[in-house]
Image 1 (spheres, rainbow, N blue to C red):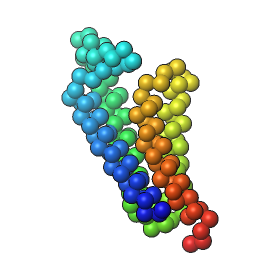
Image 2: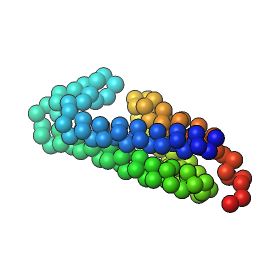
Image 3: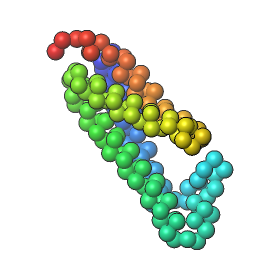
Image 4: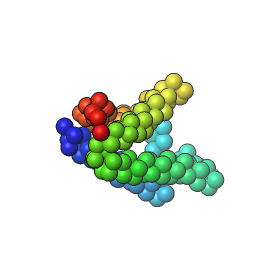
Length: 141
C-alpha cells in the first residue's frame, strides 16, 4: 500500500502543479468567467484597467500559491514520504487539511459553493492516499 500511496500523491501533486500553471496562464492572458453567472472578465472590468489588472493579479497570485504548494507537496511525497518518514505523513496531512478548511470556509463566509468541487477532488484523493499508508504512524522507525 505504501507504493500505491506515494504514487497517488505524486499524481495528485503533478496534476495540481499543471492545473495551477494553466490557471496562471489564464489569469495573465485569458478572458475567464467570474462568478456563478459566468460573467466574462472583460465585462466585469468594463474598460477599467485597474480593475482588470486587479482581477488578473488575484487569480495569478492564487495560481502561484497553488503551484508553490504543489512543488512542496511533490518534494515531500517523492522524497521523505516515499522513504517512510512519519513526519512527512503529518506534513502532507496538515497541508491537505488546511486546504480543505480554507476552501470549505467559502460556504460559511460567502454562502457559495462555487469552486469547492474542483478543490475537494485533489483533497479527497490525497487523504485517501494517506489513509492507504496510515500504518506507518504506528510503525517504529
